[in-house]
Image 1 (spheres, rainbow, N blue to C red):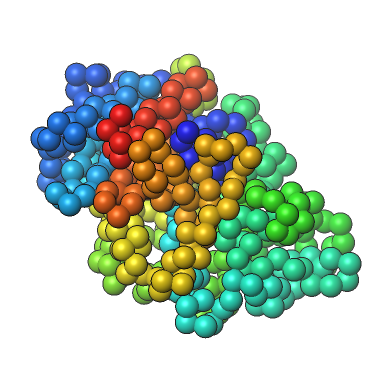
Image 2: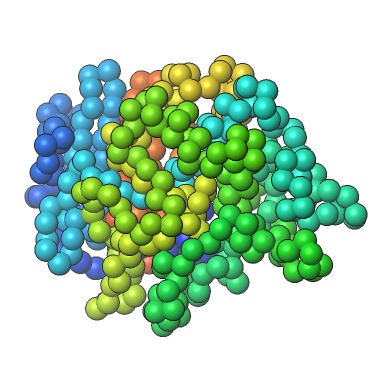
Length: 411
């Protein structure tokens, strides 16, 4: 089962594959291959050819484009299928940038665990100790939610970015979505505090918050509120924003020059595929330019497959975290009573395939879907621009899952 069907991907939670768009001209099956671009290298080994063919199943299922890179002992192979723009029909570039959605959480979790390793923060610390007055009191006492519960999604905090009645309109209604966009919804700025208040209410207004999913530590529920708070914690502890801290701790040391935090900017720098929102058989809306501030520390980042692989290799090799903190990151809890679903650690999920175990995260945000998975032997970074009806989107999710299995198990 794809992790994409388990973990809520920002706006993709309420129904299957919500970040998607409309039936468009895409690459035909015989066009599956390596996209144009200087950084693209053609796979030649049978195994590599097999996964690039599996990549093509995404566009056969009506995704607009898909790009992927696989790294192992023999180097990095990159491939792309489909078009970067429905209007021009230009081929997608495998070295393009894209919004990574909730893969941002792995970066944020890494920065928090580095602070833990430095003794500046504890996973058992109550969040209220560092961010007083933000979370509502319980029976006249401070909230008992801990830093670790935020990072593992066991806090129970409600998610206003993924639930009906939250920040977004009825995404099943094209008319409601059109109205929301016309009112500036795609470019509206949200502060982290606004996101948290939308989840728990204003402490000065009794009864203004939404009920939690469960008591702290009593269950598991994916909530972007958790990581918005984690970003606020980083700023409180360091005096710098989470973006600045991740840049100095991770991006610059690893040479990740194609990765960025857009903040309130709607722009994706450099070469990139355009993204679309499906409204009906004859209508799609271009949602490439959005203000991702509502995602913030839970999902705002932009990157490339090469940069994501560089980060993932360094993380899994122990170059970013001390052994104790790496063990914490991989101490994964069940996300469901179903045995074959991923388990979730600290910003990192454990996915059991037919032949091996891989670690990583997925992400989705208005028209972009990302997968980042790997182990000590091989890593995969995938981005595609979803598209089409619910049935099309289900087929894309299945192709996404099959690609991960193909890359690591050859099946």
